[in-house]
Image (tube, rainbow, N blue to C red):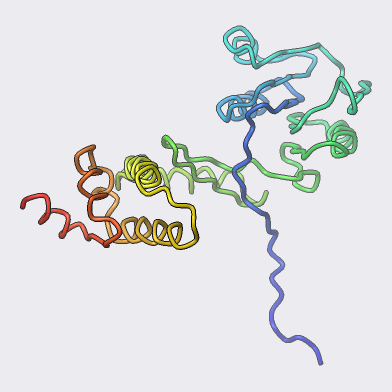
Length: 244
């Protein structure tokens, strides 16, 4: 019996937030794409970013002066370079930001032995894509077209930015983070029932309050809201309690 269900042939990927604290990153290339990758991993907290190319743009040179994490370690000709990936060339993530496919293939073959790799504009050589990122404080949204339309991802990201900025989502995320920490501090039980009750209560708040309502919470509001735990409190109920 054959399976008549349609096959989903779309390229798929697992979107993750990868923690770079303490990580060593290699960036091959010195142009604007390389600069974009350097800025991305620098903002994500990478401990060491090594840029390797015959030459680099002025912006990367400036970053090496203003950020100890960024180093331009040699003016290397990548076509002839050999790498000791088990020792001095060890890294946790590798970006190839060059236009020569043969060199990108060489780098991919070499570094895939030890870490995930990304080769700019060559999807079939990539273990991961960088995507187009919206960042508003602790709120981050990644838009990925899985290598199909990187430029279109930029437009989609801009639309999402407008939505986030128009609905106070950033403040809502920040305030819920504070509320969550206060809740765990005040009701710190680690048994299964306590954890379940905390999660249910906070989920109810997140689901029933608007972004603007959550974003407007202040210290006094946190205390008042937590005083009602574990009872669910709608925003209307909260306002009524605050007035009484």
